[in-house]
Length: 490
Ligand SMILES: *[C@@H]1O[C@H](CO)[C@@H](O)[C@H](O)[C@H]1NC(C)=O
Ligand SMILES: *[C@@H]1O[C@H](CO)[C@@H](O)[C@H](O)[C@H]1NC(C)=O
Ligand SMILES: *[C@@H]1O[C@H](CO)[C@@H](O)[C@H](O)[C@H]1NC(C)=O
Ligand SMILES: *[C@@H]1O[C@H](CO)[C@@H](O)[C@H](O)[C@H]1NC(C)=O
Ligand SMILES: *[C@@H]1O[C@H](CO)[C@@H](O)[C@H](O)[C@H]1NC(C)=O
Image (cartoon, rainbow, N blue to C red):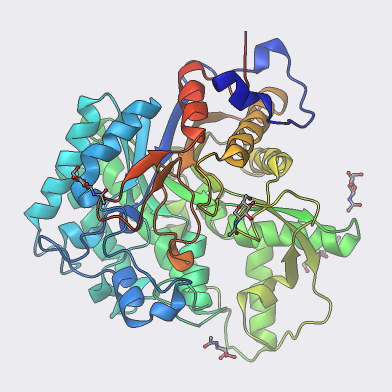
């Protein structure tokens, strides 16, 4: 059966030398989820509403299918089943997130909800019992609604509240958790949540709210890093890092304008968060362009907030490695006819994105399969940030749920992993781990339950939320065991 399964996967022309077909022995493999997307139990045992509970309950029209994460995969009650699946897959680690509102229902440090703490202790203990290392995300988008009512991430005070929450997590779980990630995908938190009203909290304040949000998130991340470094690292001996997403940008034509705007856009889309952490301060092109546009628009100073010298130093160097999420690549071209007077993030760049119709499609129309883009991206990151250690914290593709035989997903992972191997061996990029998104189908934010990223199918019509392996589970199990992404490495 298995041979047959691999037989009809047609592969493109990567040429592998014998020595470079396999991932090194110490390379780590795992899968990921996040609290709001799987846990359910949104108001059980003392949990309070997050901004995602609030958005889905008050404005369900924001979600394609009008549904929510009230029950989701019911993992609050079914975590042992989840761990059984992880065991079956043979992962080295499991990346999941803590729901801030489950352990601090007021949002603040004043009241700890011990039932919530118990849930995460149970999950962590179950993982460790099965030799699976927990990798814990502190913030995967579910801000306490109480804090949103103070302005959420646009309010600089959030740095304090996040710091207290982070310190509590290190205290509560740090004896058992050795891999921490601070903020998941800050660019999307800010652009989709505060810039355009797509993701929670769904504010519409592009070119202003997004930059304020990014400024606070960077300071909050750095604060959590320093707290870990100063107060916990010596005893707990773990690692802590940020998770940035990057969908690679490729010039649509070879015109000077397209090549130039593509590089500019890379700095806005990735450098916005990577530069302060790796190089110190925002990218120069971002500082210059936002200042120039702001002046023309009649603002007394740049809409992009300014870091003090002290803050620049404080943020620089605050990640043990680069957590990297990626799904696809886009073509980028310069937008000749846009209105500079219009305040907005996209106008600050002056670009448009699209994709090549020739690229293979997934169930998510904008997300094509572009493994060679991943390789270009890794090379760019290496060259721009002085060869950081990279840990893939998410990579995956969506199906539409019509078949358990997800051959396209197997092909996707195989091609992505071959591109990663090429990057490691031919471009000398340092990659130490890889995480597939996702363990199972779950609540995919504004797409509701329409997009299925899981290795396991979940039956959302059954009260049991029955999990069933898709074909990709067999592929992944073999990969995790042999470190070989193709049929045969020997
Ligand atoms: C967002 O704000 C802009 C500028 O004020 C406005 O033109 C646009 O219609 C708003 N969009 C939504 C969905 O509210
Ligand atoms: C741009 O130039 C590169 C390098 O010569 C080439 O590989 C690529 O296909 C060209 N892109 C387009 C859109 O013509
Ligand atoms: C690229 O764009 C930046 C920002 O608009 C500009 O300062 C620079 O001169 C451009 N470079 C080229 C080669 O066109
Ligand atoms: C679901 O995806 C499969 C495989 O890509 C495709 O053949 C099928 O038409 C899709 N079904 C729907 C309802 O979109
Ligand atoms: C749910 O699980 C219970 C216990 O295993 C079983 O008896 C029941 O038939 C299941 N229901 C469905 C709809 O799958």
